[in-house]
Image (cartoon, rainbow, N blue to C red; front, side, top):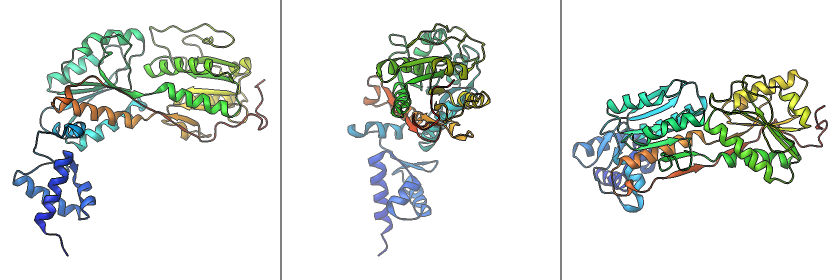
Length: 390
């Protein structure tokens, strides 16, 4: 028997009121009717003032949210009314572009307009973009500052802490005790990501491991620090060593150098070509962690040109997983939850924008765990010829 129209519309209202906002397509699936039918019902209910409609989403007209569901309701009430959300990311940064798209998908779903700003690679470029966005009426800010070095981050602390609108840092963890320490942030747990990489190599019998990593971003610095800590704590690791993954991978205010048997950074200063094959031979290493993906693919290519085969002679785990799977040898890679970071950051911002008492609560620092994508660039020691490279 066909469901009466009014009963179906009452069901739509019940779902919308309980969740704050629901996509029309989701309502159609849940009610087991066509999208056209639901859209017609939503239009009529909106005309009667019983709900609000916009961009494929039906929203509750109530501003009172159930305490237990505050974040979800808050996201709904932060919808299309008001100014846009400013989204600021560095130019030419494929990793963060995935985060950008994750954030945009959530904002689009809730009818919130996005004002995208791409920051040039020079120092201090984010501030004028944010000021322009605020002058244009932005009511919230999602931002991933480039922060190539510690001085870059410090120069942003004061003004970014005083922006005056709800702000969430994406894939950035401010320095403890800084003016941004209490700012909302959502990022990957890079310590766990490095743990996955080292643990995978150790489980395959590798005992001498080299990290070739960048040193010009917060993510790079987190990876380097984590590698030192994780490797030093693993008794199976006989020797670990760090070099640059690219000659231009150091911030202008960075330092690089040193070297020791087991634990400190390797040689190879800023501007020098990276001869990973020579380092592997010197350290008698059979495993390598390479950050980031583009550098990893280029290093694997150079290893091949030097007569070092992956994975036959050296097992490799890349870090980033943006293009790691596209190499001639698809690289096993640590995959941070890039799009999920953006989605979680946007959801947190919309919660802050809802204006309810709960939305003014303490700052939140959210970490999401990376995954290990096993492909074909690492193999067990003992599968010939996997012996120290000579």
